[in-house]
Image (cartoon, rainbow, N blue to C red; front, top):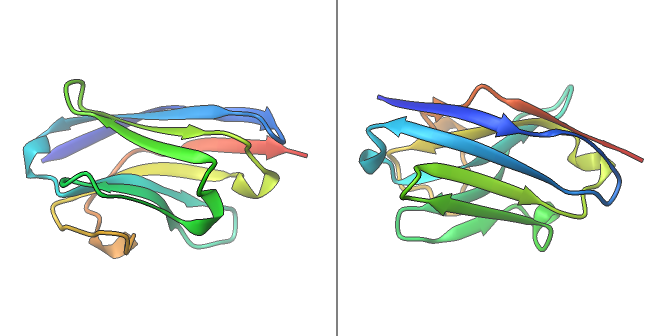
Length: 124
């Protein structure tokens, strides 16, 4: 079993920065891919960034160059540094994990474990 607890998020203006954190506990050594997803109001939940157990990192095109995903294995913490935020980044953000090696696919259906979600709001 794996448990994920998120922190961070909030409200910023266009161009601002926020950091999301996710503390992972339980059977973390069994995980193959961890990452972040987001869901805007009225839209489907979609992948933002992932890290595989071999260190491969993937980002959705819309956040490349602005967001940075990182994993601190010693602290079992996953972070998402978000810079140059835009109003279209407004969404509920979720950390997620899976025992399946996902690569850059960011297939929501492959992810088994989820954080509780945290709201990010970017105002124009």
